[in-house]
Amino acid sequence: SQQGEEDPQALSIQEGENATMNCSYKTSINNLQWYRQNSGRGLVHLILIRSNEREKHSGRLRVTLDTSKKSSSLLITASRAADTASYFCATVSMDSSYKLIFGSGTRLLVRP
Amino acid sequence: EAGVTQSPTHLIKTRGQQVTLRCSPISGHTSVYWYQQALGLGLQFLLWYDEGEERNRGNFPPRFSGRQFPNYSSELNVNALELEDSALYLCASSLGLGGYGYTFGSGTRLTVV
Image (tube, rainbow over all chains, first blue to last red; front, side, top):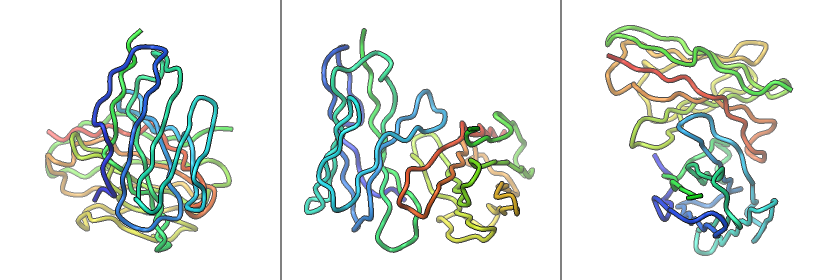
């Protein structure tokens, strides 16, 4: 079963613009991770944020986490056509099951 | 360093047949996870193996099974294939238990006809 929902389901922007994707989850978490998937192939790990962190940066990526609202956001700044992909958030719960539970994903299209 | 490798990349099977998918984790990773990504259903957790043992199982019928070998590679077996088993099957490995990002393979695309 899915942990939560991602919003929006699809996003189309112009190259150079910023893209923001949101993720909500249901249970208490150990950490939250973001992944990218190109053309229905394997997922690439982008960034991990722990439950005691509020914000994290990696290159053009900025992730925030609000555990009180059980939500996270991924911001991609100065987007490029190569950023076109599906983006998924995934959570590791506090129950020590250690498995990643994925959200439904956001399809991002960056127009050149 | 080699990534997570999966084989085969594509597979076509007939309903009722059996299939075996293979996964080799990154060297040093002892945990292997299997996910199913069916069209329109997102990524569903299937199985987790660590140190040769099945540690957790998703909400899938018993005809989905697997094992992990002493070298930490893993197999996913699906018996009595059904049309709805058509999906991308992804394997991932991890350095530690839950506190690290997972590295995914490119997947096996299974089509059941």
